[in-house]
Length: 342
Image 1 (spheres, one colour):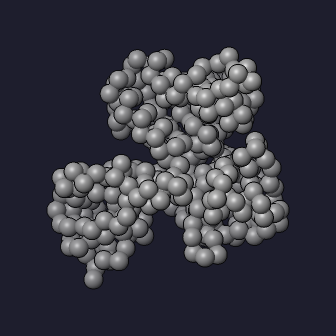
Image 2: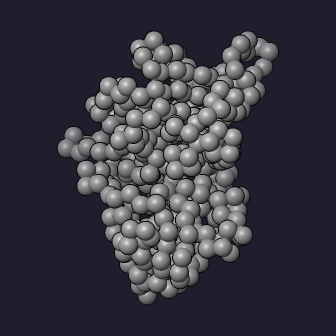
């Protein structure tokens, strides 16, 4: 059965079958709702059902609590319609310049950036190009039908292979392959570009870029794009890791500070050991922002990394530093372990 979905406040409509999610149907219709993980873990697609009924698939309570659901809250990435719907959601019009594609690629390079972070470079066929926005991600299409999502770590204007930063999660279905059996010249298929986490170029507000671990990958792409368009925006990058070696491109960030007039970099380490000889900032990376910026009312924030970091950042930036909630853009990196908690 097919139902009609109306988006408020725009009034735009699309059809949605009972066996597909509201998000999937919207994307199929060329309408983009905010989304990140697409599996009920990050909460980026959270909205409201004003009229009608949906049924939710598996999702994490932290993304949508029972109380929120009872009050009409919905995660559109795992909500399926049971009737015609009127939903409330922020909407972004699709752009024909960034079509969703399924493409083959060849592994052009594998390089360890640290003990547990691998750089993967993907070479596309000679007649193919992926148009994407700085900050977006792709999904690997694995042989058994599973998918794994990774952010693009280079800016769209850069010629050559696409770059990804993959952290090894011991026992991880895909990352074990990356660190043990994947080799250069292997063929990988992927679908992209994906996600509503990307640089809002129309704004001239100062920016806080917040990364934890390999959440640095899309942040790197955003910074490279800002350099490319000769942006004059004030940018402050905060990058957090447990140990100094987790900041695997620390030297590049320091290089940016010497080249970019309005750029500042603050590395933060949460669990430094004596042997690390770390003399920089310590603690939680989002707390460093709160300590430095009492007033974020005129800022935009782009945050990427572990869900706990992203959630804590949004909560505290809005509550303690007056950040407008609609100026917080985020991508939570959900792992297989995160999904197992649903």
